[in-house]
Length: 214
Image (tube, rainbow, N blue to C red; front, side, top):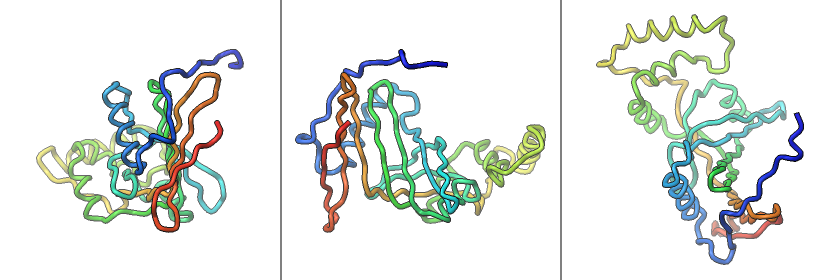
């Protein structure tokens, strides 16, 4: 397959370093709100890149669930491949790509587990069957003989925990927060001369910005 003749010209918007807000969280919220208002499908879906002790990067899609004053939170299985990577190397990157807006946001920082009580609170807010699904996928990324094994386990869990019962929060499941160290905002422009503005913190924990070449 040859895609060398397939290309689009990005001409929807622009990003001026001189007019961006002091805080990257303000700009991120503005962009996320615009993505939601434009009905971008799951704009909170992000590519999460990790790298363990083997120095082999891994990437997958996870869902952003909260923006805090310092970073972003998602939830997953702690025993998963990504969890093992994070245990060995507590650095990660997340990438949001909103094709409809010709924008992307790249977040880099230190990653760590959040408080267990906070994870439990979120788990209990999940749909009942999603809670059961967390138990089915243990250990996540582990090999399984066939789909029937998973379906049988899910069926048994529905018997053990009917809709009107509380599903216990697994000890192996919970949230991670990426504490943002740098965050880059990318706006597609015509002729591949894109706008790129990156925020980073100085020695006084103040946010500074710089423009990058496309």
